[in-house]
Image 1 (cartoon, rainbow, N blue to C red):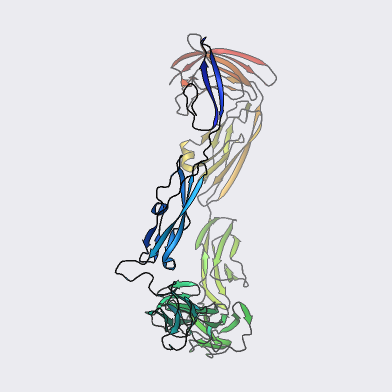
Image 2 (cartoon, rainbow, N blue to C red; image 1 turned 180 degrees about the vertical axis):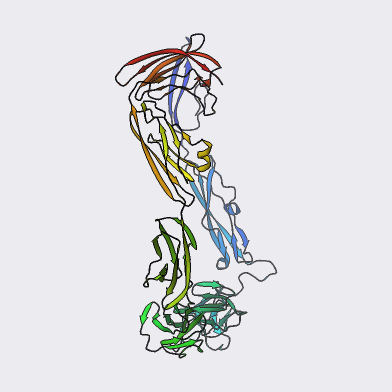
Length: 626
């Protein structure tokens, strides 16, 4: 459609146009346009001749039969009533061409399609032939075999080559079921076609007859077929191309083989094997005997697969070595070995041989008595201890007195003079030799003694304690104030045998000394020190915070229970340390801002408070020396 202003619209819809009047004013006009094509297209065709290909088929498209079909608005699509042809379509075939334009208008026309065999010198695709899905079958096939031939001929006659007088069918197909290899022919219009159906024999084999074997045995199963004939072996679901033999083993009972030969024929056979579990015997435990004694041996029990059996019924036993045995068979036996010997017994149920168990008979030599220690030195009136080994029971001889047999392995003897102890080990009925231990008495005089001066004092009391012991080698001190000390004789002498413990608390303190000789003889002594209450304060004038462990802190010593609070100032009056109330006497560690201060004199101001609240104000100087 064309508007008054010259605009063109080719589709249906709602459109607008602008018109200008004489006065120059514009007006908008709206058009509702519907465009429709009602003209039918014209279908024109032409006749054609086509040739079947070597497979007997030919196909055409709409362009092959179209002869300038047309439409005023253009053709949208073409459709053929038939486009694929085969041998049955040989000759003239009427094909309809349908044309449709874009608005659904349509027209049709017919064309003659003449179908001919191939013009090539090869065999015509529609020559008579026999088709079958397969030409090779195994002799156990079940379904009939369908044979078909080329259609489109007037008449057919089927027969089997070895019996041409019997017609098997007169259609394009037949169904047969030969029991042996056979050749089938079809005849039509003087042409003949044939097909041979091969019936292959099955790969028959046998795995053998069912049998009973011992569970430790195995049986090699084999089809016996020539390997070149077999494609696959399927043993119990495991398929292989090579495994012609299979080892049947316990505990499976049913074994089967399925073989597939080169013609895809299958045969399967199975064999059932019963497995007899051999008996298992258990001998009596290993034993030991004294020389010349006799060992009793026996089969304790017989089991089959864990179940207890009657060991006297239906079993055969064989013992070896026999020279030192009473007999070589039976459940019970006796042995007279002249050396350590293993005796073996095997068991059989008549079919299966069971296990062999062994028992060792050891000859126990006369036990070797051993007394420890060989000798020892004890202090007079102390208990001496000796331990015996080599047996489970013992005969003891204490200084010439023989005691009754006992299981005691240790003896404690109060010794007043040198003596001896002897022991004889006993194991079962075997007695060993005697072993002896000598005990000597240390007669060294040991005396623990010390002097304390003075015995009394006030808080922060530091008495002088002098060691006056005799015969000692080691000294253990307990000063009663929580301080203990252990020194040897050399260390004690190097100190000039003097000690200076500090007692910072009020009370009575017990000082104890344990003196021990070289042979562990001991003596002890103790003295009590009385410390009274008195306020005490000591502020040092210098200290050295150099980390050598000696006088590293500004340490204030005072009566127990007091607290300290105060500050430290440098030479410019700057406060470099302050503490809250402390019960610890280590007041200042000589640092400021986590660094050790320089050598010099520092001023302190400290408040000391006793337990009853009494305050002492102290100020002064302390020198830092590094």
